[in-house]
Length: 138
Image (cartoon, rainbow, N blue to C red; front, side):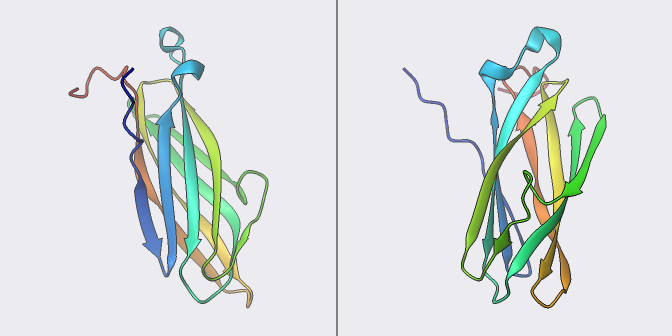
């Protein structure tokens, strides 16, 4: 049985906060004949700075291949407001549905340190590609 290649990894660094994202197409949860395409993505936040940061808000922009935009804004991530100290990492997995076989996601996290100073950390733009996207070369 042939092994699928590892999903691509995307990365961005903002002032010592490294954010990595790995998207993965979910074959078993997708229904292409009903225009339902599902992805999961794993985000890892690594604090390479000398400050302790708490993720207080998230801002996602999801665009499908038809150009439709979904904005997802809210407190924290996955119901939490995690704190990441110097040298620490926090990771979580979430999901995104699309009505088309491909799209893109990007976003930001609003972080606050122990002194109350805020920073906006960039989440790298990443593609959501499925094998059902016939517009892409194989």
